[in-house]
Structure formats: structure tokens, C-alpha cells
Image 1 (cartoon, one colour):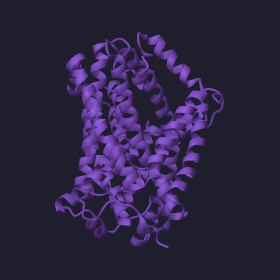
Image 2: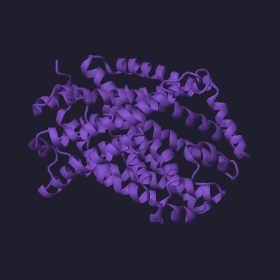
Image 3: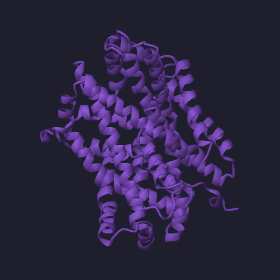
Image 4: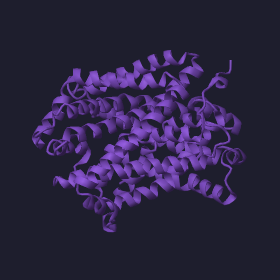
Length: 451
């Protein structure tokens, strides 16, 4: 039986753009982008980041969508089918396998982090941040990390939220969630940006983010920007490929990709402005690292009138962003189970969700009961993060773009990307040469092989 005939489809380009933007907009935009900009000089980093989105992110995303729509299958079956079509080795299907495995690993610890955000949402809503000082914020985070039961509760809640949406299918689940949550995300983001404009130090935030000091641009700035552009767009794990497989033939991939990249970038920039306007207004340091939103912002929210509402809105924004991303991360694995193991979508979600949940439990225990357990010198959480983010995603992304631009037949690529000859040549050059160099540099840098 050909299970590809029963696959769902997006109702149109708008639905795909909302869903793909939801996949892209996640913790990377609201949590990671602001602190990276803070650590790498603000405007200098933003400028390089925008360039990297254009010359690396967009070509890779176009390639991944193209492969998915061409095959109309889950990532594993898609790469196997496309390899046969191109007369290439069947080993290319391992690229799809890598994506599914990477997605499962990422979702396991992503859900744990999202659980922390749900916990902070509850604390903000109940006024727990009132009068909080930096020492109290540090103690609150340490207390959460040291409590396996509390972490397990919120991890479980987030996994149920994720699998509940995915179990409903493409149109009733993924598309409906995107149509509700993406406008809600935009509305909350605009409210927070408006607050920063009215009550924060928006002038300093604007100057910090857009007044580029070119002396601050270093090789590390460029590598951080390339990595953020690549990972922010959810590339290399099969999520965008499987979303592309639900895309109708008449929709232009290039235009849809531009819309998604612009939406993702806009969210990152607005998040930076909202966060830094609050940070500067309270005399805090923008280069606070990964703890920026969990150690710094609760102190700020606790020291202003209406801080409970402001903090609740902010952490609700982060929860929604994590949710829209998590359903896309789960979809490649679920699609593979439905199409290859002939399972119903609900049953596939239960099995896949349970496996990921167990892996997440191991990750959260690495902060407390299993903190002495090390894998290659890393905690379980850090080892999972390193394997997926630093190895599987860059290698998977590199192989995807190489396959699409070097292995896939040119005539087939032209059918999926009906661009003018000039713009098709631009995509092909970027996909063949620019993007692979950028992704290779990411891999060499994060693995410590680059200098």
C-alpha cells in the first residue's frame, strides 16, 4: 500500500508559511538571539546575522523544501526515493535517518528547557518575582534545576501539549496550531516591544542592536552568526523537509522561503529590542550569556509596576514559540512511523512521545540525581545537546544542500524551483559553494577542529 497517497497537505501558501515560521520561531529567537547579540557586540552581530540568513539560511531552506515536495514523503523515504531518481547511492537515505534521530534527541532536552519556561510563567503569573534580587533569581533557578520532580512535571506537560497537536494531523493539528499561535505570538511580541518603547530604554536598545561597530566583528562573531542563522531556521533535522512534503505543486518555494526567513528574522529582532530595552532600563548587562532571560529578566519584572502581567506575557510568548517549534521537530519522526511502520498517527505519537519523554527524563536528572554521570566528560543533557546540535544538524544540513545542488538532477531542481535562469543560477551557486562552506565552518568551529 502506498501511504504517500493518504498524506495531508497544507490548505495553501499562507498555512505553510505560518507553520514553517512557527517551526523557525522558537527558543533560538527569543532566548538565544538576544544573548548572542549581547555577547558579540550588538549591531555588529546583527549585521553579520542578516547577511548569513540571506546567503546561507535561505538557500539551505529552499533546498530542504524542494527535496520534501519533490519526494512527497517523510525525510528517510524522501532521501531514498530521490537518490533512486538521481541514480545515486541508497546510502543517501541515512541523511533522513540522521534528521529523525536529531529531532528526537533535540526534542528530549528542548522539552526540558520549555518546562523551565512553563515553571517561570507560573511564577510570573503568581507574583513570585516581586522584589526579586539577582541572588534570589540565581537561587530560584538552582532550586528548579535541583528538583527532579518539578522538572519532570513540566517536561511531561510540554510533551503532552506537543504530541496532542501532532496527533491531530496536518490540517487539524499542525496548521490549526500555527494559525492560532503565530498571530498570538506576534501580538504578544508587539505588546512587549510597545512596553519597551514606553517604559524601557528603547533608545539604547536600538543603538546597541543597529549601530554597528565594525571593529567588533571577529571570526567568532561570524561563526556565531552563521550558526544562529542555520539553527534558527530549523534546518538539517528534516522538519522543513517534511513540511515541504505537504506543500502543493503550484506554490512557489522561493517566495514562501523568503516569507518564512523574514518572519523568523523579524521575531528575532523584535525579541532583541524588547529584551534589551528592559535590560538597559534596569542597568543590567546585555552580555549576560544564556542566563539572560532566566536570571536577569525576572529581576526586572519583579521591580516594576505591573511586573506580574509583563513577566507572564513574556514567558507565555516563549512557551508559545517553543511549542510551535516542538511540533515541527516531532513531525519527521511521526511521519516516518506512520508511513513506514503503518501505524495510526495517534499510536505513533504515543510511542514516539514516550521514547522522547524517557530520554528527556535522563536529561533533566543530569542536573541533580545523575549529575555525576558523564558521557565523554559531559553531562547527559550537554552530551545530547552536543551530539544533535554540533554534529547531526550541521552534517545533515551540509549533506542536504550538497544532494540538492550536486546530486539531484538539474532538470528536477528546475521543475521544483521555476525561477528565471539568473535567479536559479544564484540559488545554485549559493547552494553549491557558499552554504556548504558556511555549514562546514560551523561544524569545524563547534567541534573544536577550527583553530
